[in-house]
Length: 158
Image: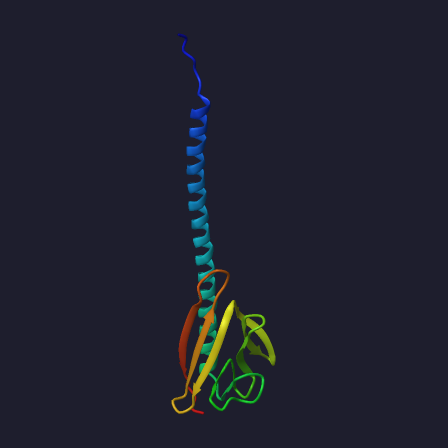
């Protein structure tokens, strides 16, 4: 009997099947890792935006001399709760733009973007204790919502 070298058709099919399973597992593992990386990158970006916005708002509000909280574009809110705050007799302020999903800052009577990928922003002003509570939530892509809450103790009596 002569010895033949090579693979039989059955051996080739089995080898290709095993290789296919391994390739699919490697691709699935890579895809899962990439999705996690992308989601975490989005979450980190949102956290950075929230922290930057919070630090800017705290610094500006703390120096404010008059505080007014608005529930919308109308008159100041009686409950002192809403997505819009003005200080220093309207020359400064922050508001939530739901359409653009941004926090905007008022500079020289013009609203300019401060942070993006924001889902909600709420200001609550406690006149008795002279504290402004800020609560905001952001989300981008498939990241989970990230929330940040802070309070500002005003320096100037009102």
